[in-house]
Length: 230
Image (cartoon, rainbow, N blue to C red):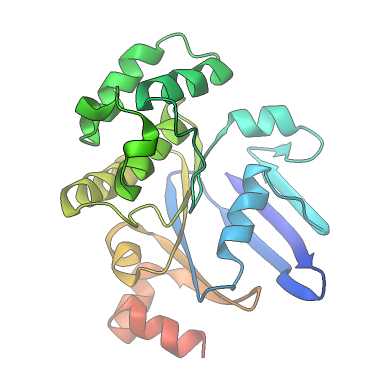
């Protein structure tokens, strides 16, 4: 579970997040929707501990991302929108590097299993610099979930993926236990996998609720977004 209270973040005079509150529950998939610049990616970066914030409190399963940073980060997996990787490493080398940072004992088995699941196993020994955007996305996703985190933060997770891998990832999201948070522009992804959705506009939560309720009332998440966020 991730709890966020009165979180604010500004970049100079630009307000990215303004006193937002969230409760991301266990065994629940929560989607964050909003236009470019609404604060979706900023929110996930802050939760992952890779970006600072101006005020507020964030608890990861009860651990403060500030006061108990190491314990909180061990409970997190984070897929950024634009993953950074070392182009001269192979996919396998990069994943073993991440595994060493996580001090995983069964790294080889997990790498083989997840790379097969995402359809990239035969490319593991190629340099990352030769990968397509979708292939890099797959490697980055494996690095985010290899330690089986209780809390998973996904920023535009299906962007650049082929249809088969996209479906595999959607099934993975729906079936995993723990807390899953997705920042996305895709109404279809929200309808397919999310239980709860928050609509962000200019750094503020303008509406939130059960995906099923929005679908019942408005017919689609796309229509709900236009109604709630206008």
